Length: 156
Image (cartoon, rainbow, N blue to C red; front, top):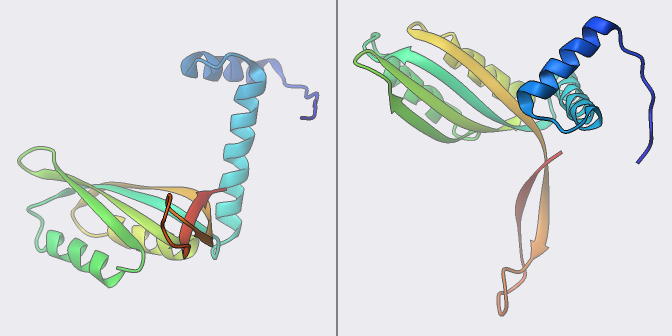
């Protein structure tokens, strides 16, 4: 591990201390490491549309909006290569929330999520991205199992 010295103005230091208190960080080093990691992940995702990622498209919509449920389902089927699963929650008489888990290239995942969130009747939407590395690995699953190869997705 390397030691780095930084200088922060009083306002920024105050914001850092508030951030730490809100999240119960034990020390500034841990807080700053997490913030640097998050910033680097975000920079990677913004600059590399072909980079692989996991995503969660979270959206709230009016389930009575004309054909919206069908359009959302059709969009997921049309992008079955990206869409891993969808959780559907009934919020009240008029609103539903869905969380669609996606995996693929950042640009493709963003495009799909933007399309869903822009649908008429979707009241709120957000995409959360996590950069990942995909690797095919050969291994066994316990005693007596034959070696086999399959895809592993690991967080960067």
